[in-house]
View 1 (spheres, rainbow, N blue to C red):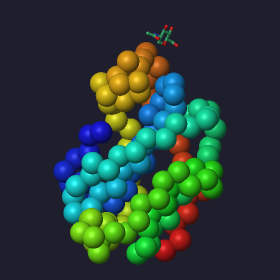
View 2 (cartoon, rainbow, N blue to C red; view 1 turned 90 degrees about the vertical axis):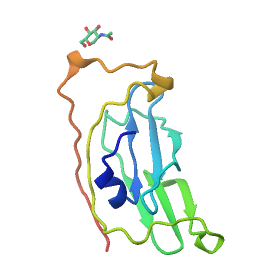
View 3 (cartoon, rainbow, N blue to C red; view 1 turned 180 degrees about the vertical axis):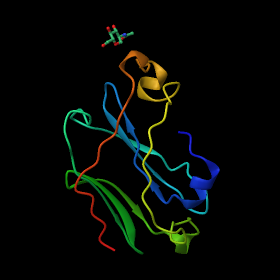
View 4 (cartoon, protein in one colour; view 1 turned 120 degrees about the vertical axis):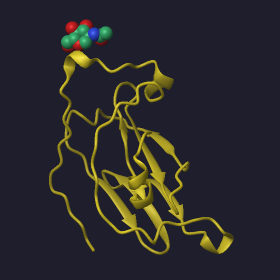
Length: 130
Ligand SMILES: *[C@@H]1O[C@H](CO)[C@@H](O)[C@H](O)[C@H]1NC(C)=O
């Protein structure tokens, strides 16, 4: 995953999709500018075929990632045990597409087919319950 350094200090959570079989969504949590807390979950659908609901619940107790209302990851606030928890970053939403086929699906075996470019990402019904 390649994220610019300015983003790393801003980003609390990331939810990148890895296209190609198996369809995967990766979660990562950045605290104090450090990530390295990636987890990947295989999706049982092609995320490019239709819209789905992706939710991040983020409060002082935990961060929960949901896909279509099913929790896929819970990250508890364990600051009391010295584990960083994102809470100081300004909040915002940033979306991007990037090329990472050297290490993405199936360890880089699945290459981007550039003849299918340009690639687009669409969003709808965005909600922010702050
Ligand atoms: C790339 O996509 C094109 C158009 O769909 C297809 O004809 C071609 O076989 C694909 N190439 C590879 C390597 O999958």
